[in-house]
Length: 344
Ligand code: FA5
Image 1 (cartoon, helix red, strand yellow):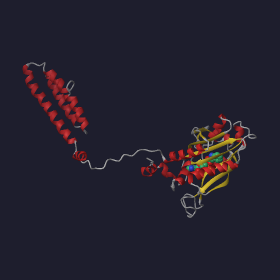
Image 2 (image 1 turned 90 degrees about the vertical axis):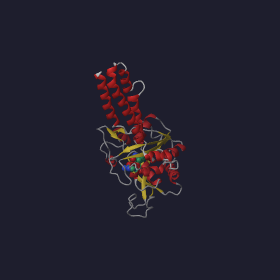
Image 3 (image 1 turned 135 degrees about the vertical axis):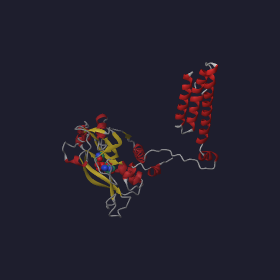
Image 4 (image 1 turned 180 degrees about the vertical axis):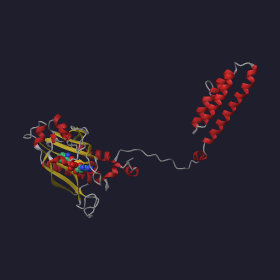
């Protein structure tokens, strides 16, 4: 008998404790089931036990048990009402209120721009390849004709993982990986992330995207390189875009060039322009004819085959295509900026 009284007392305290934690209507129902549920509710089981008692014992325990049941029922009903807040009830009633706006996610602007680039090259018969972001020194430098300690390595401020592994500084190592496996004719582009120890500014990032292009076949000339890149840039920016080829140096191409497009931020009118420095031009890619030594490194005969390659900064070019004067906006995750590219 004393054990049933103890149990009543225990469940009264348990209920008081649990009811104090309730925050939403769903929990009221859970509590009702736990205490008053038809088969396994705590109180239902106490009433079962109550039936086994003698008449005298039933008198005192019955009153306490019924009181507990009524208290629980009243408290739960009260709580249920309170949780239906006036604001919520009003909102349910007022059908003229505007609905809540839902935002759909969409691909990042750089992804959209990369797809656009891929679409143009695929339409010219190129296929898309990929390569690892963690590279060996051999693929990132040596096979591309940068001997160890060569000063040309200084232009790529490299993040090393250990003596042999590094974060690739450009997409050019994938040229080597592809040429080791496939023999000419080759006509590919290679988009992907690259990493450099750079201080961010309006046109530089320490992690950015490049797309590499590589064509290898018999009789390929610089004229093919020039024609393809001009067609590509005009398809992206429109016929009127001004571009120029400038002589340059890369250890893995000879001759080499860089391509600049007119600064669409200041058009060359602002001597203090933070994008072009007042020159009116901004570099978007490096390119050139594949160096014969690179062909030898992958067992392609440079007497038979020739080829060209380029490496374009996707983020840098996207800045110009979307007319954004600041490359860092792409990675600040400001939804007001990103939603402008939402195409749904
Ligand atoms: C290269 O990376 C060479 N691999 C390109 C190449 C490929 C030359 C094939 C010849 C043949 P460069 O370091 O100049 O070159 O980078 C190429 C492009 O990447 C630049 O024109 C620019 O558009 C972009 N870029 C370079 N550094 C950054 C940076 N820190 N942030 C954003 N974009 C960058």
